[in-house]
Image (cartoon, rainbow, N blue to C red; front, top):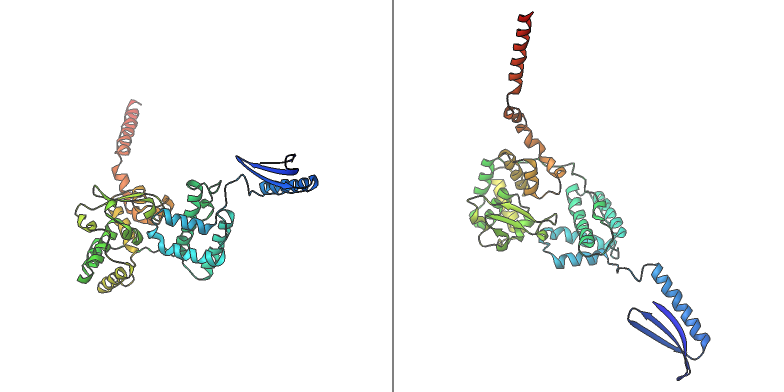
Length: 343
């Protein structure tokens, strides 16, 4: 970028020329003083623009623009309800917050507002995850920001964690209690218990997700934004026939509520089926890292809420070790006996 002043004799005019890359802009004046004054003004404006980051740097985008881009490029069905709530809050409280520090500050205000409103930590974490996802994409894929900022937003573990797990018999009773008119919903409930998929993930399933007896979730279908593979039970093929499921959240809720009432468990929540899946994995002898992968947890810290289910198997470890102690003890006693005989 440069600004020059010259006299064009053929037209008897003074010309100020601005160059930017391959482009040139010219303005003419009758006198040299007018041209010089204008040129100096433009040099000052250009210098301020460069200093303030308005030129020579990547353009700035708002969080709301990032939210729109995420929705446009990915399947966000599994997080639709939380996206709507976050969009409503930002639209009312921080509509022009740029992706960067301003978004972080706004997200923390949103956290405080949700706490004051009495929302559970799980609900707050779900809303914050929406912001974290946009910040992650802005850094990793869109090149909107220079530094990863999603890690600066924390999601404390809920203090009111539920530990409700159904036994195999209780799961079977729940499924059988679903009224016949809710056959499609019965399939969804059964699949949830046998795969640990979240409700939003179940509703996004289509035939392309089923490959070789596995459910392959794409990044846009999961809460974490990462792909996940979950095996289907050997006899569970019928559960994923004719996808997507021909139902909605309201119908599924009605079917689940009727079933839980029929078995006398009105305390049950649909998400407890996910906990039940983790419990069944532990009972089947799977290690915690496997449970982490199948549930799609970001780290073992999240999976550690199920740690107590693995405790019963810890004592079994000692029985699997070789019998070294008895042998060495016997040899030690024999050695002592020989020494005593020698003396």
